[in-house]
Amino acid sequence: MHKIIQNLINIQKEINSNLDNLKVTKVPKIIAVSKTFTIDKINPLIQYGHLDYGENKVQEAINKWADIKLTNKDINLHLIGNLQTNKVKFAVNLFDYIHSVDSEKIAKKIFDEQRKQNKKIKLFIQVNIGNENQKSGVSKSSLPSLYSYCKSLNLDVVGLMCIPPLDKSASSYFKEMNILNNNLGLNELSMGMSADYLEALQNSATYLRIGSNIFGKRS
Image (cartoon, rainbow, N blue to C red):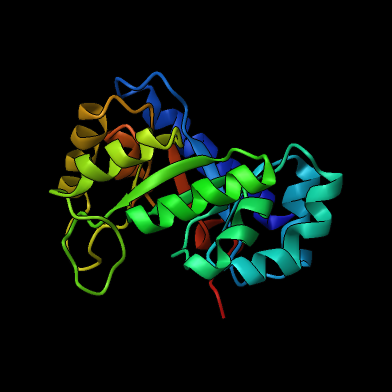
């Protein structure tokens, strides 16, 4: 068995064993974060039947996934990086999920492109949960108004997403995200990466974005 398949299986086993100890009924989906990895590195997982993959950059994703998506209709491609307005039309065309909606401007652009392309994709609103200047995401105080705006456009917002501060324990931020998500009545929650996915799991994450623990370290 290929090493990255074994890595994925090991993570799934670890998650399942932790689910037994938690009051969590929904098994989270693992987004294999394939950014910077070439398609030959990803192919074993595709052939194994894994369906969810995450990319940071729209152009890189087009180069890697456009042809594969034509022949693998069940694959879900997730944009987990910052989305620029001039890339929205390409993102709507290729991706199934966008995890980084953080402004009314980007929401309106997605709305316009979905109408043009007659396609509706699932969206997460990214929250700057640590209030960090260098990170994207809507502030906690502005979240309700952005969510209301997205709903006024009939966008399919399924949940919230965050990247907690690197230099602090993630648990308190994940707990806060879960509360924010529940307050809006949303069902999905995108949080947790290779270093902290078990903590995210404990706080009801439904999508875990795991890269290096599956594919190995990036060069």
